[in-house]
Image 1 (cartoon, protein in one colour):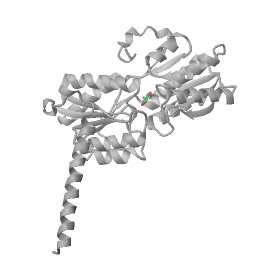
Image 2 (cartoon, helix red, strand yellow):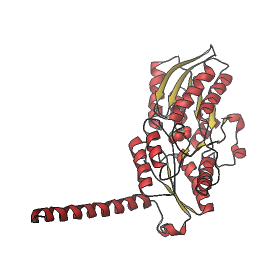
Image 3 (spheres, helix red, strand yellow):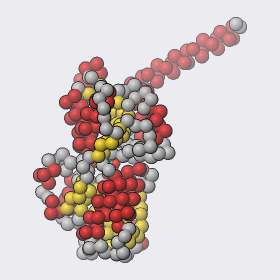
Image 4 (cartoon, rainbow, N blue to C red):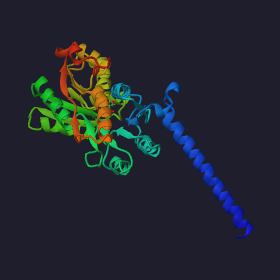
Length: 332
Ligand code: BGC
């Protein structure tokens, strides 16, 4: 070996070692940044799971996290809540990959699309068990799904709209995302429910990108572009709120029907004020709590049903106050 080769070889090895040290350090930091100081001893826990939602800073997902954290506490699990602060597909996928690299014991995440999530889930599940939550990637090899039956929930919304508008409405749909499986199913279910109704027309379908501000902008634009619209259907937690803000401000005296999704406090306020007529109530807290239980069962070799649908129902002003909801799903 020439001297030059030896020097080049030594440098190569050095670079490789420094690279490894960086990855380990960076990986550790990423996976532990959310842990409170006193909780950092991973050996104190039986299992280490990660919950990766499409958006951390979202009140709906905070409820899923709340359920999951409570179950984690009850069963001795270290649970991290990690992912994009604001909806971002690349960051979402990267967090799933990083969780796999960190060798956690289980990953709970949404299966947002067949194009990008299914291949990644199939790769990850070879090494770490994956449960989809809230949104299923039904064609992937995920071990189980827990969450709403999203097609059925859209169907329920359509039936509620027919009932409340006596079968006469020009509807605009604002959906969280054109890309995501659950949002597509919620639109599809709704379209199927209203398709045989002569008096119901779907005028336009727009996208809010999981943002209440964007939902409000879209609602404003729709009312300008399509003056015949007299009903809205919002398919994710912030859509109904964004639509209601606009209707409350500019169309208070017109009869505009709104049906939304979820039972966040602002949605309930708009229902009690009569601005939102109805909402599809999901059970985010339950999804989180039971998701952890399912993950433990499957790690411990117990049989787990591949699909667990949490409850979905329509909630109107007449159903308030919400004491019968037990508070959890209502966001308190
Ligand atoms: C959906 C979640 C979504 C959230 C957005 C909910 O209705 O189930 O998947 O992230 O709305 O605000």
